[in-house]
Length: 292
Image (cartoon, rainbow, N blue to C red; front, side, top):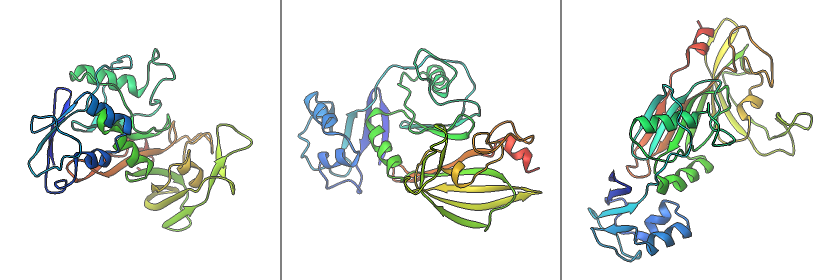
């Protein structure tokens, strides 16, 4: 479907994939809550072909649906930084997070987080929007982080992440080699009883499935592609223990000043165009230098 942002509304042209369903069914497709749907009706915050209609109305091809979809107001302090924006449209902004940076502060009066940098970017690009990250990375991990710009679509993306419909691929460097060039680790992960900061393989833990594939070797170092099918805390770090420079599960390394883990690819179906979006982010220089 063609769509565009118009002030605080999302304007969508209905196509053949959506035609024939009711407006209510379309709201359910977007995973809107009963409360959100009720408020949209109560406030008459949508129109179909410039008129408010009942939500049982059947959508037809080339209908123009306009829905109040955007909130206003940046809610983190702006902090100047040169962000690496990898992808952006009216719904999403995907950035390459540098190392030694957390996603958000524990108090919105604090600074030096990715959310503060995003707030500055929105300010400079004249976007008066709340800062809504969709997932997190560890402080040391570099790579792709998704931010949702459209409040109406956040439940959809939250659902996509929770149901693992957004494929996440990481690159890690280990010392030595995998037992096999391609392998699957299917071992449950739970809290380490001896350390509140660590996770471990545990019979009583939650299911965790990770795919590993050797990509490149240099001397005694191996670049490994990691795809996670579950989203457990420290999943790759536990299943691939130890990653070079991971001081929590391994030790410091003279080759790199942080853990050599990079969130390199995100792949998902766009909710309105239905196109497959595949975003890749090159290996950072500190990891690349190990392999040279």
